[in-house]
Each structure stands twice: as structure tokens, then as C-alpha cells.
Amino acid sequence: MLSSQLLDVLHLRKSGPLVFDSRFFAVGLWRWVIFIMYGTGYYFLMSYLSRKKMEMQQAIENEKLKLDLVKSEKDFLRTQINPHLLFNTLNFVKFAAKNRPAEANEAIICLSEIMRFALEQSNTELTSIKSEVDQVKNIILLNQLRFDHTLQIDLKERIENEHLLIIPVVLLTLVENVFKHGNLVEPGYPAEINIEADQRNLIFITRNLADKGSQIQNSCTGIKNILLRLNLCYGEEHSLEYKMEGNIFITKLTIPLKTADH
Image (tube, rainbow, N blue to C red; front, top):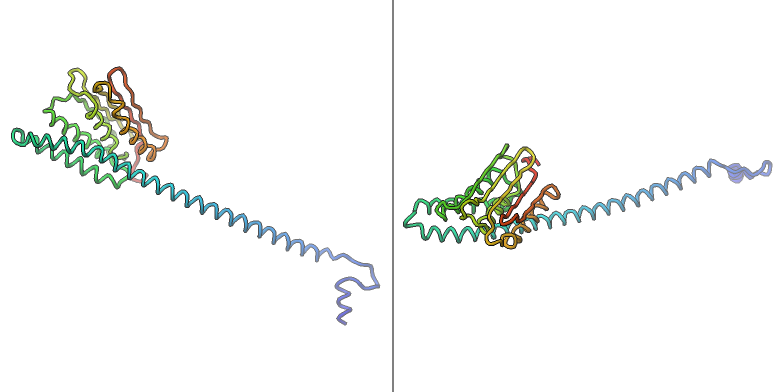
């Protein structure tokens, strides 16, 4: 009985011709195709996931490096600004304390606000236009106090929304460069500081008489560090130009404005 059934399955009875079972072949071929498809798909899936994991790890490392670099640049710029202000202000306070105590006290208040701002911004990516411009005004007032209000400075501002955000300390650094390397006591050559901001961009321009034609050389290090920070924050969406026109040193900064939910 068993041998008879086996012959029936194999179609090998002598009473009939040999028959090829296409269904059996098709089922086997289909299973083989399915196995190859699943195997190939699994291989490509695992390769894709592995590649994406490596790309994600690399992206995380790159972002960490960027954050570390931004922090180091902020720290560097802050140390570049603060000692200059600190020493000059303390010297002024020392000599003005007896004869001009009110102005000495005002200078200390201005310096403390600038220092506090720089320290608070060391751990933040962005600050409001108002906060930065307030410190620009403080640094102007501080220098005017030191020079008994004899400096030739013309500050103009036109800001539509002072609560929009920018990278901190950059405007402050550019203004500090004006005082460090410019000639602000020459009659008829006031230093010009223009701040314009609409809802999308901020344009910041300074023009000042260069001190013995050396401002570009002396400002290069500070400007290069500013450029590095701008590149990390804004990529190609910003521009910073600086040049000499005769004996006038000019800087022009254009940056996009951001909102709190950027």
C-alpha cells in the first residue's frame, strides 16, 4: 500500500508516462525567491541602519565640537573685552574718585552692567537686540566719562522690534574696536555707529577715523574671532565687511534676526 501511494505521488506507475509536477517546482522556487528577498532586504536594512548610526554619531560629535568651539570663542572674546574695560575704568575711577565722584560712580555702574551681561551671555546662544544695544550705549557712556565727554561719537538706531534675537557680544566687540583703535578726538571726524533692524535682518555699520592708519592690522584678530562665531551661528546667512577708505575705517555687519522659538 505504501509503495503504491509513493508511486502515485511520483507519477512513476508503469501504466502511465513520467509527469513533471509544476506545482511542486513552483512552490519550491517561490520559497527560494522569498528567502532571497528577505535575506537581501535584511542585509540592506542592517547596512542602512549601521550607516545611519555612524552618521548620527558623527553628527553628534560635530555638534559637540561646534558647541565647545562656540563656548571657547565666547570666553576668548569676553576675556578680550573685559580686561581692557576693567583696567581703563579702574584707572579712571582711581583718579576721579576725589574730584568727580558722581562720574566715578556712574562709570562703576556702567562697567558692572557690561561685565554682568558678558558673563550671563557666556552660556546662552542668543540675546535680544535691546540687551546688546543697551551695552553698546553703556560702553559709549563709559568712554565718554573717561574722556570728560570730549569724544566725537554719533550713535543712530532704528529698530522695529527690539525683542528679536542676535548672537551676543558681537556688536559690543565691534564698538570696543572703535574705541581701542580709532581716533575719536579729532574735530569734524565723529565716529558713526548706525544700527538698523527690520523684522528680518540687522545691519550694523561703524565709521571712524583710524588711529595712525593701523586699525585694520590691530583689529584683525578680533574680527577673525567674530567671523568664526558668526559662521557657526548663521552659516552663509551673514556678512561682515571691513575696509579702509582713505583714513576712515569702516565695518558693516548684516545678520538675520531670530525669534525665541527659532
